[in-house]
Length: 411
Image: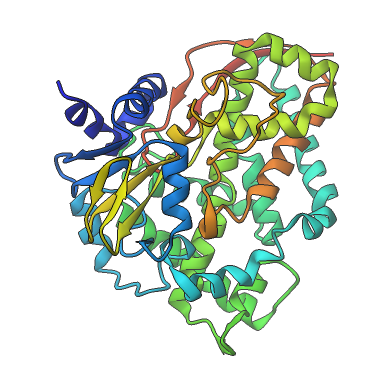
Protein backbone atom coordinates (compact mmCIF):
# COMPACT_ATOMS: atom_id res chain seq x y z
CA UNK A 1 0.00 0.00 0.00
CA UNK A 2 1.34 3.45 -0.92
CA UNK A 3 2.02 6.12 1.69
CA UNK A 4 -0.87 8.15 0.20
CA UNK A 5 -3.29 5.28 0.72
CA UNK A 6 -2.08 4.58 4.25
CA UNK A 7 -2.01 8.22 5.32
CA UNK A 8 -5.60 8.82 4.23
CA UNK A 9 -6.76 7.31 7.54
CA UNK A 10 -5.41 10.39 9.36
CA UNK A 11 -8.55 12.23 8.29
CA UNK A 12 -10.71 9.62 9.99
CA UNK A 13 -11.67 10.22 13.62
CA UNK A 14 -11.56 6.52 14.45
CA UNK A 15 -7.82 6.31 13.76
CA UNK A 16 -7.02 8.46 16.78
CA UNK A 17 -8.26 5.84 19.23
CA UNK A 18 -4.89 4.17 18.54
CA UNK A 19 -2.28 6.92 19.06
CA UNK A 20 0.69 4.54 18.79
CA UNK A 21 -0.22 3.65 15.21
CA UNK A 22 -1.09 7.27 14.41
CA UNK A 23 2.34 8.46 15.55
CA UNK A 24 4.07 5.69 13.57
CA UNK A 25 2.23 6.81 10.46
CA UNK A 26 3.00 10.48 11.10
CA UNK A 27 6.70 9.67 11.60
CA UNK A 28 6.71 7.86 8.25
CA UNK A 29 5.08 10.89 6.61
CA UNK A 30 7.75 13.21 8.03
CA UNK A 31 10.48 10.93 6.66
CA UNK A 32 9.05 10.01 3.27
CA UNK A 33 6.43 12.54 2.19
CA UNK A 34 5.98 15.46 4.59
CA UNK A 35 3.54 17.15 2.18
CA UNK A 36 1.24 14.35 1.08
CA UNK A 37 -1.91 14.43 -1.08
CA UNK A 38 -4.68 12.09 0.12
CA UNK A 39 -8.22 11.34 -0.99
CA UNK A 40 -10.01 9.73 1.98
CA UNK A 41 -13.37 8.15 1.23
CA UNK A 42 -16.22 10.37 2.41
CA UNK A 43 -13.99 13.44 2.80
CA UNK A 44 -12.83 16.18 0.48
CA UNK A 45 -9.25 15.55 -0.77
CA UNK A 46 -6.46 17.39 1.05
CA UNK A 47 -2.75 17.80 1.65
CA UNK A 48 -1.35 16.41 4.92
CA UNK A 49 1.32 18.69 6.41
CA UNK A 50 3.42 16.79 8.94
CA UNK A 51 6.60 18.81 9.60
CA UNK A 52 6.77 21.64 12.13
CA UNK A 53 8.42 24.22 9.87
CA UNK A 54 5.88 23.67 7.10
CA UNK A 55 3.07 24.06 9.63
CA UNK A 56 4.66 27.29 10.87
CA UNK A 57 5.02 28.58 7.31
CA UNK A 58 1.35 28.03 6.57
CA UNK A 59 0.17 29.49 9.88
CA UNK A 60 2.42 32.54 9.45
CA UNK A 61 1.40 33.30 5.87
CA UNK A 62 -2.22 34.21 6.41
CA UNK A 63 -2.28 36.02 3.07
CA UNK A 64 -1.70 32.66 1.35
CA UNK A 65 -3.74 30.33 3.58
CA UNK A 66 -7.13 31.03 5.17
CA UNK A 67 -8.99 29.42 8.06
CA UNK A 68 -12.26 29.88 6.19
CA UNK A 69 -14.23 28.15 4.81
CA UNK A 70 -12.90 24.90 6.32
CA UNK A 71 -11.02 25.19 9.62
CA UNK A 72 -11.40 21.50 10.49
CA UNK A 73 -11.58 18.24 8.56
CA UNK A 74 -14.84 16.36 8.81
CA UNK A 75 -16.89 14.03 6.59
CA UNK A 76 -18.64 15.79 3.70
CA UNK A 77 -22.06 14.91 5.12
CA UNK A 78 -21.17 16.65 8.39
CA UNK A 79 -19.93 19.73 6.53
CA UNK A 80 -23.21 19.94 4.64
CA UNK A 81 -25.28 19.55 7.83
CA UNK A 82 -23.41 22.36 9.59
CA UNK A 83 -23.79 24.63 6.53
CA UNK A 84 -27.53 24.60 7.20
CA UNK A 85 -26.88 26.70 10.31
CA UNK A 86 -25.82 29.62 8.06
CA UNK A 87 -23.37 30.87 10.70
CA UNK A 88 -21.72 33.43 8.44
CA UNK A 89 -18.19 34.81 8.93
CA UNK A 90 -18.30 35.01 12.72
CA UNK A 91 -20.66 32.29 13.93
CA UNK A 92 -18.11 29.47 13.84
CA UNK A 93 -15.83 31.32 16.25
CA UNK A 94 -12.24 32.47 16.25
CA UNK A 95 -10.86 29.31 14.66
CA UNK A 96 -12.67 30.05 11.40
CA UNK A 97 -11.90 33.78 11.11
CA UNK A 98 -9.18 35.49 9.12
CA UNK A 99 -7.37 38.81 8.83
CA UNK A 100 -8.56 41.97 10.59
CA UNK A 101 -11.83 40.32 11.60
CA UNK A 102 -9.96 37.58 13.45
CA UNK A 103 -7.67 40.11 15.12
CA UNK A 104 -10.56 42.28 16.33
CA UNK A 105 -12.46 39.33 17.78
CA UNK A 106 -9.33 37.85 19.35
CA UNK A 107 -8.57 41.21 20.99
CA UNK A 108 -11.80 40.89 23.00
CA UNK A 109 -10.23 38.28 25.31
CA UNK A 110 -6.52 38.49 24.48
CA UNK A 111 -5.53 40.56 27.51
CA UNK A 112 -7.77 38.49 29.78
CA UNK A 113 -5.79 35.33 28.93
CA UNK A 114 -2.36 36.94 29.32
CA UNK A 115 -0.16 35.87 32.29
CA UNK A 116 -0.36 39.27 34.00
CA UNK A 117 -4.15 38.93 34.27
CA UNK A 118 -4.15 35.22 35.07
CA UNK A 119 -1.87 35.79 38.05
CA UNK A 120 -4.88 37.24 39.81
CA UNK A 121 -6.68 33.90 39.30
CA UNK A 122 -3.86 31.68 40.60
CA UNK A 123 -5.47 31.17 44.02
CA UNK A 124 -8.75 30.09 42.42
CA UNK A 125 -6.92 27.59 40.18
CA UNK A 126 -4.91 26.30 43.17
CA UNK A 127 -8.12 25.80 45.17
CA UNK A 128 -9.64 23.81 42.32
CA UNK A 129 -6.47 21.72 42.01
CA UNK A 130 -6.57 20.91 45.73
CA UNK A 131 -10.25 19.99 45.54
CA UNK A 132 -9.62 17.47 42.76
CA UNK A 133 -6.51 16.00 44.38
CA UNK A 134 -8.63 15.60 47.52
CA UNK A 135 -11.25 13.86 45.39
CA UNK A 136 -8.62 11.50 44.01
CA UNK A 137 -7.41 10.72 47.53
CA UNK A 138 -10.95 9.89 48.67
CA UNK A 139 -11.19 7.34 45.86
CA UNK A 140 -8.02 5.50 46.93
CA UNK A 141 -6.73 2.93 46.23
CA UNK A 142 -7.90 3.27 42.59
CA UNK A 143 -9.80 5.47 40.16
CA UNK A 144 -10.22 6.22 36.50
CA UNK A 145 -8.11 9.37 36.40
CA UNK A 146 -9.61 10.49 33.09
CA UNK A 147 -13.29 10.22 33.98
CA UNK A 148 -13.00 10.92 37.72
CA UNK A 149 -10.51 13.79 37.75
CA UNK A 150 -9.08 15.05 34.44
CA UNK A 151 -12.44 15.60 32.74
CA UNK A 152 -13.76 17.70 35.62
CA UNK A 153 -10.91 19.80 37.03
CA UNK A 154 -10.15 21.99 33.96
CA UNK A 155 -13.89 22.21 33.28
CA UNK A 156 -14.57 23.59 36.75
CA UNK A 157 -11.73 26.11 36.33
CA UNK A 158 -13.00 27.57 33.04
CA UNK A 159 -16.64 27.47 34.14
CA UNK A 160 -15.67 29.08 37.44
CA UNK A 161 -13.93 31.85 35.52
CA UNK A 162 -17.11 32.16 33.45
CA UNK A 163 -19.28 32.17 36.60
CA UNK A 164 -21.24 29.14 35.40
CA UNK A 165 -22.60 27.02 38.29
CA UNK A 166 -21.16 23.61 39.14
CA UNK A 167 -24.50 21.90 38.54
CA UNK A 168 -24.02 22.59 34.80
CA UNK A 169 -20.70 20.72 34.63
CA UNK A 170 -22.22 17.41 33.47
CA UNK A 171 -24.24 19.09 30.72
CA UNK A 172 -21.20 20.98 29.38
CA UNK A 173 -18.83 18.03 29.37
CA UNK A 174 -21.43 15.76 27.76
CA UNK A 175 -22.09 18.25 24.96
CA UNK A 176 -18.37 18.79 24.44
CA UNK A 177 -17.76 15.06 24.02
CA UNK A 178 -20.70 14.76 21.65
CA UNK A 179 -19.40 17.68 19.60
CA UNK A 180 -15.77 16.52 19.29
CA UNK A 181 -16.17 12.76 19.67
CA UNK A 182 -19.20 12.24 17.45
CA UNK A 183 -17.64 9.06 16.00
CA UNK A 184 -16.95 7.52 19.41
CA UNK A 185 -19.44 5.02 20.83
CA UNK A 186 -18.27 5.19 24.44
CA UNK A 187 -18.89 8.67 25.82
CA UNK A 188 -20.29 9.77 29.19
CA UNK A 189 -23.74 9.93 27.60
CA UNK A 190 -25.31 7.03 25.72
CA UNK A 191 -27.21 9.50 23.52
CA UNK A 192 -25.69 9.60 20.03
CA UNK A 193 -25.73 13.04 18.41
CA UNK A 194 -24.42 14.32 15.12
CA UNK A 195 -22.13 17.34 15.26
CA UNK A 196 -24.98 19.51 14.03
CA UNK A 197 -27.30 18.22 16.77
CA UNK A 198 -24.64 18.77 19.45
CA UNK A 199 -24.10 22.29 18.13
CA UNK A 200 -27.84 22.98 18.40
CA UNK A 201 -27.89 21.75 22.01
CA UNK A 202 -24.93 23.97 22.88
CA UNK A 203 -26.62 27.03 21.40
CA UNK A 204 -29.85 26.21 23.26
CA UNK A 205 -27.85 26.13 26.51
CA UNK A 206 -25.85 29.30 25.82
CA UNK A 207 -28.67 31.56 24.56
CA UNK A 208 -30.38 32.22 27.93
CA UNK A 209 -26.97 32.60 29.58
CA UNK A 210 -26.14 35.35 27.10
CA UNK A 211 -29.38 37.20 27.84
CA UNK A 212 -28.78 36.96 31.59
CA UNK A 213 -25.21 38.35 31.35
CA UNK A 214 -26.34 41.17 29.12
CA UNK A 215 -28.96 42.15 31.66
CA UNK A 216 -26.71 41.58 34.69
CA UNK A 217 -23.05 41.81 33.63
CA UNK A 218 -20.32 40.82 36.05
CA UNK A 219 -16.52 40.58 36.00
CA UNK A 220 -16.56 37.05 34.57
CA UNK A 221 -15.40 35.84 31.17
CA UNK A 222 -18.89 35.35 29.73
CA UNK A 223 -19.89 38.91 30.65
CA UNK A 224 -16.75 40.22 28.97
CA UNK A 225 -17.60 38.46 25.72
CA UNK A 226 -21.35 39.09 25.52
CA UNK A 227 -20.93 42.82 26.21
CA UNK A 228 -17.94 43.36 23.92
CA UNK A 229 -18.01 45.65 20.91
CA UNK A 230 -16.39 45.26 17.49
CA UNK A 231 -15.73 48.55 15.68
CA UNK A 232 -17.95 50.30 18.21
CA UNK A 233 -20.92 47.98 17.63
CA UNK A 234 -22.20 45.19 19.90
CA UNK A 235 -21.54 41.67 18.68
CA UNK A 236 -24.61 39.95 17.24
CA UNK A 237 -26.02 36.79 18.81
CA UNK A 238 -24.49 34.40 16.27
CA UNK A 239 -21.02 35.89 16.84
CA UNK A 240 -21.38 35.64 20.62
CA UNK A 241 -22.55 32.03 20.40
CA UNK A 242 -19.57 31.10 18.22
CA UNK A 243 -17.13 32.86 20.56
CA UNK A 244 -18.52 31.26 23.71
CA UNK A 245 -18.57 27.82 22.12
CA UNK A 246 -14.83 27.99 21.48
CA UNK A 247 -13.99 29.40 24.92
CA UNK A 248 -16.15 26.94 26.86
CA UNK A 249 -15.12 23.80 24.95
CA UNK A 250 -11.46 24.53 24.16
CA UNK A 251 -11.12 25.98 27.65
CA UNK A 252 -11.31 22.55 29.24
CA UNK A 253 -11.18 19.70 26.73
CA UNK A 254 -7.61 20.25 25.59
CA UNK A 255 -6.31 20.74 29.14
CA UNK A 256 -8.13 17.62 30.31
CA UNK A 257 -6.47 15.58 27.56
CA UNK A 258 -3.04 17.03 28.38
CA UNK A 259 -3.38 16.38 32.12
CA UNK A 260 -4.49 12.76 31.74
CA UNK A 261 -2.00 12.03 28.96
CA UNK A 262 0.75 13.77 30.90
CA UNK A 263 0.08 11.71 34.01
CA UNK A 264 0.20 8.54 31.91
CA UNK A 265 3.54 9.70 30.49
CA UNK A 266 4.92 10.11 34.02
CA UNK A 267 3.73 6.59 34.92
CA UNK A 268 5.34 5.17 31.78
CA UNK A 269 8.57 7.13 32.38
CA UNK A 270 9.30 6.61 36.09
CA UNK A 271 12.71 8.29 35.86
CA UNK A 272 10.99 11.47 34.71
CA UNK A 273 8.51 11.14 37.57
CA UNK A 274 11.36 10.75 40.06
CA UNK A 275 13.21 13.73 38.60
CA UNK A 276 10.06 15.83 38.99
CA UNK A 277 9.69 14.76 42.62
CA UNK A 278 13.30 15.68 43.33
CA UNK A 279 13.13 18.97 41.43
CA UNK A 280 9.64 20.47 41.80
CA UNK A 281 10.94 23.65 40.18
CA UNK A 282 10.71 21.67 36.91
CA UNK A 283 6.90 21.49 37.17
CA UNK A 284 6.25 24.38 34.72
CA UNK A 285 8.58 22.76 32.18
CA UNK A 286 6.91 19.40 32.80
CA UNK A 287 3.48 20.91 32.13
CA UNK A 288 4.74 22.24 28.80
CA UNK A 289 6.27 18.87 27.89
CA UNK A 290 3.00 17.11 28.74
CA UNK A 291 1.16 19.36 26.31
CA UNK A 292 3.76 18.75 23.59
CA UNK A 293 3.67 15.01 24.18
CA UNK A 294 -0.12 14.73 24.10
CA UNK A 295 -0.80 17.45 21.50
CA UNK A 296 -4.52 17.33 22.26
CA UNK A 297 -5.49 19.40 19.19
CA UNK A 298 -4.64 16.98 16.41
CA UNK A 299 -5.18 19.33 13.49
CA UNK A 300 -6.63 22.43 11.96
CA UNK A 301 -7.31 22.95 8.26
CA UNK A 302 -6.48 25.85 5.96
CA UNK A 303 -7.35 26.72 2.35
CA UNK A 304 -4.77 28.01 -0.14
CA UNK A 305 -5.77 31.29 -1.81
CA UNK A 306 -2.97 31.11 -4.38
CA UNK A 307 -0.58 28.50 -5.78
CA UNK A 308 2.18 27.81 -3.24
CA UNK A 309 5.11 25.38 -3.25
CA UNK A 310 5.83 23.62 0.05
CA UNK A 311 8.20 20.71 0.50
CA UNK A 312 8.62 20.36 -3.25
CA UNK A 313 4.87 19.98 -3.79
CA UNK A 314 2.67 22.48 -5.62
CA UNK A 315 -0.37 23.31 -3.54
CA UNK A 316 -2.96 24.80 -5.87
CA UNK A 317 -5.31 27.68 -5.16
CA UNK A 318 -8.39 26.27 -3.43
CA UNK A 319 -6.64 23.17 -2.05
CA UNK A 320 -7.21 22.18 1.58
CA UNK A 321 -4.25 21.50 3.87
CA UNK A 322 -4.57 19.51 7.10
CA UNK A 323 -2.00 20.73 9.61
CA UNK A 324 -0.98 17.73 11.73
CA UNK A 325 -0.01 19.48 14.97
CA UNK A 326 0.49 16.16 16.74
CA UNK A 327 3.10 15.29 14.11
CA UNK A 328 4.78 18.69 14.15
CA UNK A 329 5.12 18.49 17.93
CA UNK A 330 7.22 15.33 17.50
CA UNK A 331 9.23 16.52 14.51
CA UNK A 332 12.78 15.27 15.06
CA UNK A 333 14.14 17.79 12.54
CA UNK A 334 13.43 20.66 14.96
CA UNK A 335 13.19 18.96 18.39
CA UNK A 336 16.04 16.65 19.48
CA UNK A 337 14.78 13.26 20.70
CA UNK A 338 11.24 14.38 19.91
CA UNK A 339 9.89 10.86 20.37
CA UNK A 340 11.03 10.84 24.01
CA UNK A 341 9.17 12.30 26.98
CA UNK A 342 11.62 14.64 28.73
CA UNK A 343 10.49 17.15 31.34
CA UNK A 344 13.78 19.05 31.17
CA UNK A 345 14.17 20.29 27.60
CA UNK A 346 16.45 23.04 26.42
CA UNK A 347 14.30 23.50 23.31
CA UNK A 348 10.79 23.65 24.73
CA UNK A 349 9.12 25.35 21.76
CA UNK A 350 6.59 23.28 19.86
CA UNK A 351 3.46 23.58 17.71
CA UNK A 352 1.00 21.80 20.00
CA UNK A 353 -0.53 25.23 20.70
CA UNK A 354 -0.56 26.08 17.01
CA UNK A 355 1.45 28.97 15.60
CA UNK A 356 1.01 32.50 14.31
CA UNK A 357 -2.16 34.60 14.67
CA UNK A 358 -4.25 31.53 15.54
CA UNK A 359 -1.96 30.33 18.34
CA UNK A 360 -4.00 29.10 21.31
CA UNK A 361 -5.36 31.97 23.41
CA UNK A 362 -5.63 29.79 26.50
CA UNK A 363 -2.11 28.33 26.48
CA UNK A 364 -1.01 30.16 29.64
CA UNK A 365 -4.13 29.09 31.54
CA UNK A 366 -3.64 25.47 30.43
CA UNK A 367 -0.04 25.40 31.68
CA UNK A 368 -1.10 27.08 34.94
CA UNK A 369 -3.81 24.46 35.56
CA UNK A 370 -1.54 21.47 34.89
CA UNK A 371 1.26 22.94 37.01
CA UNK A 372 -1.15 23.66 39.88
CA UNK A 373 -2.39 20.07 39.86
CA UNK A 374 1.12 18.62 39.85
CA UNK A 375 2.23 20.94 42.67
CA UNK A 376 -0.65 19.69 44.80
CA UNK A 377 -0.47 16.02 43.81
CA UNK A 378 3.21 15.07 43.84
CA UNK A 379 4.07 15.88 47.49
CA UNK A 380 1.04 13.85 48.62
CA UNK A 381 1.44 10.90 46.27
CA UNK A 382 3.49 7.90 47.38
CA UNK A 383 2.78 5.42 44.58
CA UNK A 384 1.04 5.51 41.19
CA UNK A 385 0.67 2.76 38.59
CA UNK A 386 -1.62 1.62 35.81
CA UNK A 387 -4.58 -0.54 36.83
CA UNK A 388 -5.86 -1.35 33.35
CA UNK A 389 -5.63 -0.42 29.70
CA UNK A 390 -5.78 3.27 28.76
CA UNK A 391 -8.41 4.03 26.10
CA UNK A 392 -8.52 7.01 23.74
CA UNK A 393 -11.31 9.12 22.29
CA UNK A 394 -11.97 8.63 18.58
CA UNK A 395 -11.61 12.20 17.31
CA UNK A 396 -9.38 13.81 14.69
CA UNK A 397 -9.76 17.27 16.27
CA UNK A 398 -9.41 17.13 20.06
CA UNK A 399 -8.46 13.67 21.24
CA UNK A 400 -7.04 12.25 24.43
CA UNK A 401 -7.62 9.59 27.04
CA UNK A 402 -11.22 8.70 27.78
CA UNK A 403 -10.18 6.08 30.34
CA UNK A 404 -7.05 5.94 32.51
CA UNK A 405 -7.45 3.36 35.30
CA UNK A 406 -4.77 3.83 37.98
CA UNK A 407 -3.86 2.44 41.40
CA UNK A 408 -2.26 4.79 43.87
CA UNK A 409 -1.37 5.42 47.49
CA UNK A 410 -1.19 8.77 49.22
CA UNK A 411 1.24 9.52 52.03
